[in-house]
Amino acid sequence: MLTTARTVAREALRSAAAASFAVSHRAGVLTTDPAPVLFAIEPQDWAIRRLGESVRDGVNARRPGTVATTLAPHRAFDRVVHFGSQYMWLGWRRHASRSNRFVTSFLHGKPEDGPEVARHIDAFLASVPDLDRIVVSNTIVHQRLSDWGVPRQKLVQIPLGVDTDLFTPADTATRAAARRRFAVPDGHLCIGSFQKDGVGWGDGMIPKPIKGPDLFVDAVARIHQRRPVYVLLTGPARGFVKHGLAAAGVPCHHEYLDDYRDLVTCYHALDLYLMTSREEGGPLAIMESMAAGTPVASTAVGMAPDLIRDGVTGAATGIDATALADAAIALLAREDLANVVAAARDAVMVTDWRRVAERHLTDVYAPLLAA
Image 1: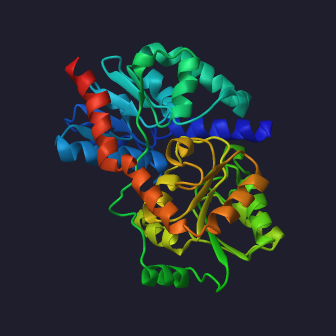
Image 2: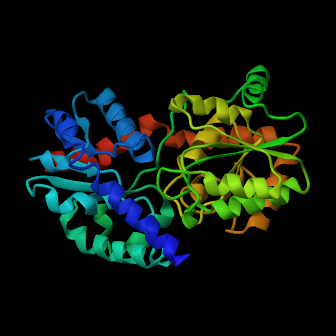
Image 3: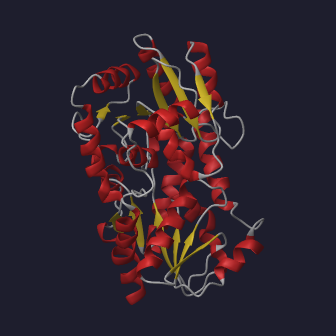
């Protein structure tokens, strides 16, 4: 477990540093944008890039020209520079001009995640004096950083967001078409997992323990003992999960989507989204599921405790495969499941990207620009 944690931490640091000089020429074009706020993103089309682009588009819809995205924050001067993760901040910190004011999102992490993560957190805490704001997405991480001595005036809690116009509940015909699209067998419970839970961007046979791929396989296998299950997977590096499901005799379909918007059809094919992480900043999949009308059973990490009221807007459990399987079965057996789904849709509206972007503008960028 510790070796895997070290590998995961090193991967995160390498990924942060590499936005890097290999793409700096391309990124420099973005950095010449006159916007007073630059959001540093990663080159991969994944969560941090989507976060930056969504905040950019949402803020600019309200105040045009305020935010631009960049892959080369070392070329920024006299700006507010927002790093999409604390790993990116530490990777770029020594290259960034002190003429800037610095913001970072702190997504997740705690010393118990492994020695490399613990060293990373020590380095981050040492860097806090250089940061003007630290954006966290959930109450757990906000309290954690406060307990570690981060000044509360630097902490801003803003949830990760979802496009509630894109992710909407399906009618019966749309749901049936989605299940045909992914060849969901009749009589099977379709369970989804749309994340990256393997190390690197290859086959993903080395699991990321914090994402709980072992818990996912175990929980699904337990559900499959009671009801036939078909698993729908998206995202890169899913080899560990696919191998585990095959060993458990659970059929699955894995498809890496070229267009993020196609995720909507994936959610519409599901009976349940199962989130099994041990540590999270979000994940985005919780909000997407709730917005799309898909029931969610989740470990009580990340944003789950802020959004999921157990039995009211979904199911939330401890980090335990048996508890997850039992909660999932109980949730789907509820006669008022439609009410749970509707309540989840109402609850998740607070994370609509327009609201999230507005919070970034009013609570983070505007005060720093005024100062």
